[in-house]
Image (cartoon, rainbow, N blue to C red; front, top):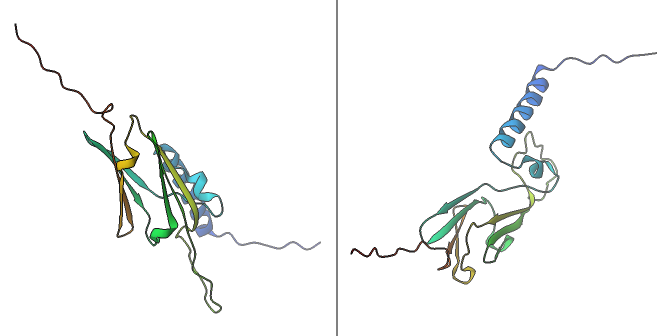
Length: 149
């Protein structure tokens, strides 16, 4: 019976430890790494800002083409979806590291108050998709006059 000896690789151990630590941080900060790990899916980072009159959603989508991004909006939610396609592999190339995420993605955001989807605007510049969605009149705070007697 022959046994193959394997050498201990400390760098492999460190990489595994780093992956575990990243999973802990991702779960603590509410990121969804389980979607990233599924083959062919990834999750873009987003920022959501609320002002008195609107919501501003920014999605990080570097390297995407406008036609590969789809926006769907209702009175209470926004869905951003699409697909980032990987460049064709060429013979003779060797990749030492592939960290850019490719494949399909989808993010759905629920708003705490009603919005006006028909008045939303979207722009895409320098890899950042910005969607501005006005709040419905019902959602805006109302000021009332105080009567002094």
